[in-house]
Image (cartoon, rainbow, N blue to C red; front, top):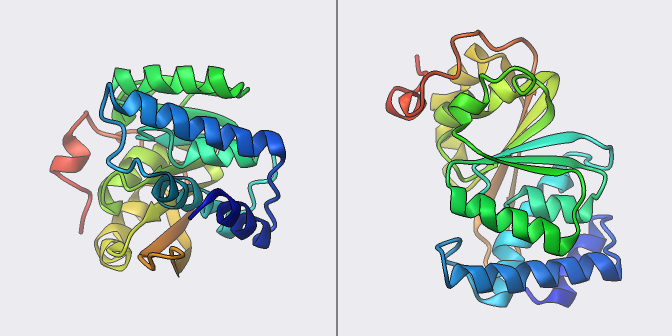
Length: 239
């Protein structure tokens, strides 16, 4: 996917990028490749692939959920900033918080945000399990996102405690989503969520399957969740 195709395909979905936003994506690509030589941020570095598999793929969340309002968004385990930084570029009104367990990625994100002149962004070096217990943070976000971090039964415990009641958890998944739903629906309900919608589509050009699971936070998350770091992965909430 070249830059023109990226721009055109977003335009088709009602997302028009200004020259400044296109420059921000270009700078993002340059910094990602430059920093990737010093630290492992991504295995994908070819420009067309970054635009398709990172930038466009991240923005697909907005095809299925209206992000035009000034929502507070928490992105769990965002790595090099996906999906929240591409979404922030497209929708500057979003207030973005990223939590990631690796300090070097947080260092990159701070540099990236400064270079792109992004406002209303915050980066935390923390585990989602401890971050979700903090006063003022827990159940405070309109939207919580995660892209390819863990299977749904685990991911729900990392993300749903951060979403406010009435908020939304958007899980971005690959082809295994249906299977994950079967084992993860119970965890979603235990943690106060209800699955509202699953959007299945194929990424253009390469045709790999993508699934966006939209989960509404209906009830408060029981206080015991999230459990200690590592526990959600070791012993997922399953029937």
